[in-house]
Amino acid sequence: MVEKIRARFEVLDERFRPVSGDAWMERIFDAGRWTEGPAYVPAGRYLVFSDIPNDRVLRWDETTGAVGVLREPADYANGRTLDRQGRLVSCEQGTRRVTRVEHDGSLTVLADRYRGKRFNSPNDVVEHSDGGIWFTDPSYGIDSDYEGIRATAELDGCHVYRIDPRGAVHRVADDFDRPNGLAFSADESTLYIGDSRRRHIRKFAVADGATLAGGEVFAAGDAGTFDGLRLDAEGRIWAAAHDGLHCFAPDGTLLGKLQVPEITSNLVFGGARRNHLFITATTSVYAIRLNVNGAAYPA
Ligand code: MG
Image (tube, rainbow, N blue to C red; front, side, top):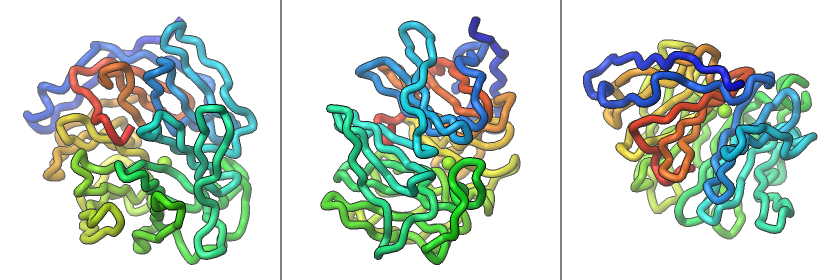
């Protein structure tokens, strides 16, 4: 039986009032330790997500509601995205790399080091329409053995990187404490990146799909750290926080929250029309149909 929980939309700005949906949220999975990395695969009608401390990747089947193990052990996979060819691109904390699953099931390592030094533990990832892969590299996967393998950092901090379409790795931001979730605006002129230790989200201008400028604080959190980010089709920014999802207008106003009973880590808009919102939150995954749609990309 799927547990149903009353949905609580907290309106902080009148612009949030039209955002609603089901009167309840469904708890579609409840046996994790720290769920993360949700990605929805429309061709197969399933959701893939990580259960990081248990070192496994799970799959929820929309047609049956069943959850099964897709990969175990899973190199402590964390955040992931679906690229424009429908392939899953994942951050692996245990192997400290970014990988892609090809259509034949084989795994391609996209990047595992920068200038000869291993990454800390890639956390979250997004694809640019030019094929570049952008990801954050905080140290959570090497800080302890809880969600990775304890190790000494080789790099001089926790930075943001871009793998260009030819496979070369570039450092695109080096002034974060713990960079975490990231998402492009629909026109890709803006990149939002959360800093989970500083508890804010920053906003960068993207030039030529390759470099960042600006980086002012876009939104500060009032409920714990920010983790994963996704945009909806109206350009609103949805961010995972400790009391649920926070929804921001493109001008940075906190419009409202969708309260969730556990600390949230990430979200993705799924379903054929991207109006089925999936939220990874501590031990669980929650799902709710909204009357807003997710952006086509990042997915
Ligand atoms: Mg994260």
